[in-house]
Structures are given as C-alpha cells and as structure tokens.
Length: 150
Image 1 (tube, rainbow, N blue to C red):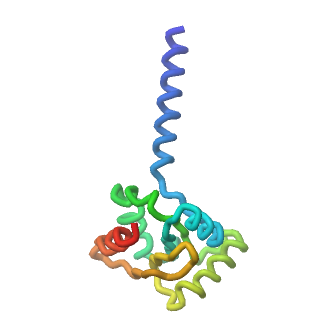
Image 2: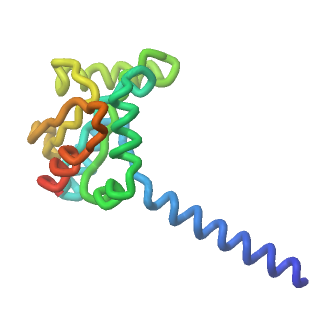
C-alpha cells in the first residue's frame, strides 16, 4: 500500500510538471488563414517567422538565442505565431505545407531574406519587419520589435 501511494504521488507530480512545461511553449500555427482568424478573434498581431530550418545558420542561431530564451516566453500570449519554414530537405514538410509556405514567401518575403520576422495585423497587413541575424548573437532588436506590438 505504501508503494502504491508513492507511485501514485510520483505519477501526479510528473503529470503536473508536463502540463506546466507544455503550457510555457509557444504554439506555432502552420496555416495562415487560421492564424488570421485566431488573431482577429483574440485582438492580437501576428508574428510570422521565415526560416530555413535545415540550412540557414542565422535562423538556427536565432531560434536558440531568441525563440528558445526565457525572455521570449513572456510574449507567448501576446501574438499569434506563424512559422514559415523553407527547408532544403523537402521531406520535412508535407507537399501541401511546402506549397502554402512558398505562397507566403512570395507574398511576405519577396526579397527571400532569412531569417525574417514580420509583424502583421490580424487582417494580414505588414506592420513591420526585422531581418537577418549575425555572429554577435544579440536578439535585442527582435525583443524591441515585440515590445512595440505587445
């Protein structure tokens, strides 16, 4: 009986910890129409992130330094997040998602700059953009952008 109570207690603790960990993660939307609908319903701006997840070193550094930082978690409820991945390895996404991402690339990233963060209104109008990331690894201009639209 004593062991049963210990196991039950550990199970509840692990479950609670997992729930808290998953609630602190940013939820990325893959479909832009759904993102606009969600943004309009929640009166939020959209943060659209253009990345080349398997080939763009600045994108990988930005992911580590910005999107995975403790400070970024403070913004998770302030925006609707859309990730537009343009990987070289076409097996990473479905054909439908690749087509969708390339249509967003043609409309919102015509210069094909990576990484690019674009802040959009809930209607899809561009409000501001910040592009590039360098070896100095200072994401402060990205945080300044988020503060402006939070």
